[in-house]
Each structure stands twice: as structure tokens, then as C-alpha cells.
Image 1 (cartoon, rainbow, N blue to C red):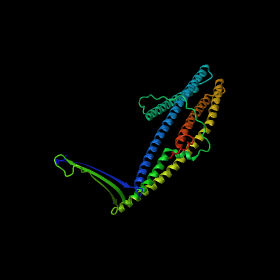
Image 2: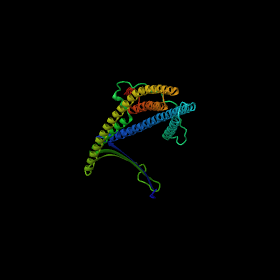
Image 3: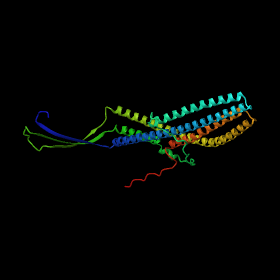
Length: 351
């Protein structure tokens, strides 16, 4: 195509003899780096799934709290009706009516605040799952069933499957391979080369029409003038290796801390749920007695209203702890990288 009337084909191949392992180290570094990125992506996926599950629990908790607030409004309305009835028959006074009316308005305000919190929890969940502003997310009317108890004596080997731990370990392997690659780059490179060429022409008569040229050879390249640069690369890669090892240790310590925190929080929530369940039952019974005393005139309205508030607080605390138990179980699964089962090792490939 250059107007000379000659056409030609040239082929060249080169193969480096990996005597010092530089190419092998480079290949392994690329492989382990890819594996670390895959593990990071898996941990991100698990984190998003855990966040969705916890947001789901919190939305259900907000719904249950709204229902409790509605019960308090109804109970406050009944107390107001009872105060008015007592005033009408002459056994009550205006003070009880005003007190009951104030308590009812306070309960209505609390119900509206909790309803707003429930709506915000739904919007947050919609945003997280990519459905905002469709307002198409609905949550269950009750919290999901709590899984079985945490088995005793969980092996620490479970933490080795956590994706972020795997990613950190793979980054350590990558750093070691990069150091080996940098050290091998200081040594001479030996390469074998092969060339093939053929030239022909339709305008000229060449001396030999069948004129392919083949050549085989080798070359030796030894770094002389850039030795300081290569040594600097070794020092840089060594520093990166130390950083990767330190980061691996930091992640390991954080992982153990997350597991311990999730276990401690769930055990505490388990104990609190039993305590609060008894508190709710006791406050409900006390409210019944206070209402009966007020109806027969042996008690005042303030005792009824105070007991109603105490029952409301106990019910809200119980729902919050029940939701917390499930949230901490999700945190525990995320901290362990899965369930409580130890997966058997993969079978080794045959020869």
C-alpha cells in the first residue's frame, strides 16, 4: 500500500523464560487480586441484604407501636367517658373530666408522632429496595418468628468464610506476590524469539519467488542503569505487604468484636424480653384494678391514667426488645458470614 509495488507479511513471537518466577508471581497476583474484589462484592451484597432485613424489622416495630398508641387513645377515650358519666351522676367533678381530656389529647399527639415514624420507616425501606416513591411497600402485621437459640461453642473457623476476611487474606497474598515479582524484576530476563517474513511483488521480478525468511534466536536483558528504580519498587511493594498484613489483623480483630457485640446484645435482649413480658402482664392487671377502684369510688382518676401510661411504656419497650432480638440475630449472621453450620471442606480434585 505504499506505492512501491511490494507486499509483505511479518510475524514475530517472543516467549520469556520465567527462570526467576517473575511472570508466575505476576499471574498469581492478578488472580488473588481478582478474588479479593469478588469477595468484597459478596460482602457488600450480604451487607445490603442485612440492612434490608433490619429495616424490615424496624418498619414492623413502628407498625406495632402505632397499634399500641391507638390502644392508648381508645383507653384514654374510655377514661374520659367514664369521668363524664361520674360527673353526670354526681360522683365526679370537673377536675377529673379536664384531666381525662388532657390525657386523651396527649395520647392522640403521641399516636400521630408514631404514625409519622411508621411512614418514615416505610419510605426508608422503599428507598433501600428501589421502590420509592411508589409507596408500594407493605410490612407484616407481626414480627417474624425468632430462629432457634445460638448453639454453644461456635468454632472460630466460621469467621474464615466471612467475605471481607477472605478479601483481606487475598490482598495479603497479592502483596506477597507483588513483592516476589518486584524482586525477580531485578534479575536478567531471558527470552526466545521467532520471526517469519515473506515479500512478493506483481511489478518486479524477484530473484526468488518463494522467499520466506525464518529466524530463531534469544536475547538476554539485564537491568543495569535502572537498578535503583527496581530496588525502590521492591521497597514499595514490601511496605504495601506490611500494610496488607496489618489491615488483615485489624479486620480480624474487628470481626471478633462484631461477633461478641452481637452475641452480648442478643443475650441481653433475650433476658429483657422475659422481664418485660412479666411487666406488661403486671401492669395490665394493675390497670384493671385501678379502673375497678375508680368505678366504685375508692380510687381517683389519676391512678387510672398513670397506670395506663405505665402499661403503654411496658408494651412499647417489649415490642422494641422483640425487634432488637431479631435485628441482633441478623447482625450475628452478618458477623459470622452465614449460619451456624460449619461447611465441609471442598473435595480435592483428582490427578
